[in-house]
Length: 320
Ligand code: NCD
Image (spheres, rainbow, N blue to C red):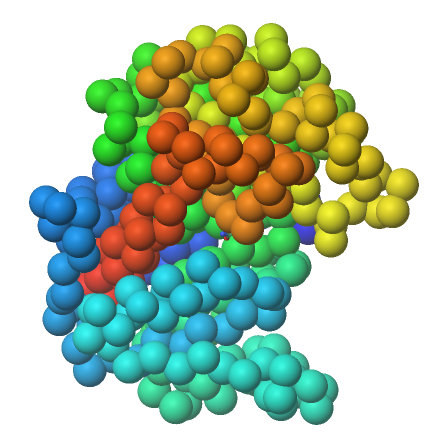
């Protein structure tokens, strides 16, 4: 399924309440801001994280069919800090390997009284399919193919809000493998909902969307031009696992043309921040001196991910 054709309608019930978190396309601003505000409330003044009892007595299952370090672990930490029981389903050794259908696995987990499924899958729209076919379980999309990664975009928005006054006047540069990036797709939806009008997509043409229908999106194949005066640089990983062999760029050339270095960073505003969802390929997407430098907020994003995931789970738990 193509990302544009996937509907998130079933994440809201008939009264407009959020019952699943599948994607940010068409998610009303009030829902988005509600999660960010709650996440803010979970962060203490010194950046520490509070604990909550919001999910007491509930069980959350992590169902990661694709590799993950920060997303899977921060979901687990977030669920635990919210007082839930958590299980990491061992999919390598699960019955899906014995040809059980995915829906049978899901129904089996539901019968184990699990309240929330956190799903990552390489297939676009897979969490949506589960949400449409199972009742009484809240689904959070932790990344489906190239389609959406809503909690990543929310943690990115929370991070931006901590450094910048408003979204309306921001210039945001999304640099790298935009075409294969669910992070970029969800990030663009979130930025637009929050009012950002200058969103620049910077990459070689074959890593950009073939066409953009939105007037707020400008495409650049020249890094220097695209970075001029931006407030935010969002660097993306080269997702080789989603490319055919002929598309994989030469890493040295790519870094020379699109790598964020101290030199290219100077083209952005002096107070610009550098973000990356991770995992970072140092010396390919971002130079180490930038990744570890004063303008990098990459580790801050990780901590914010826990707060945002706690907030999203709290909202969905309230609707169960
Ligand atoms: C991203 C993902 O999996 O979509 N990573 C993440 O969630 N932290 C981006 C990526 O893998 O490049």
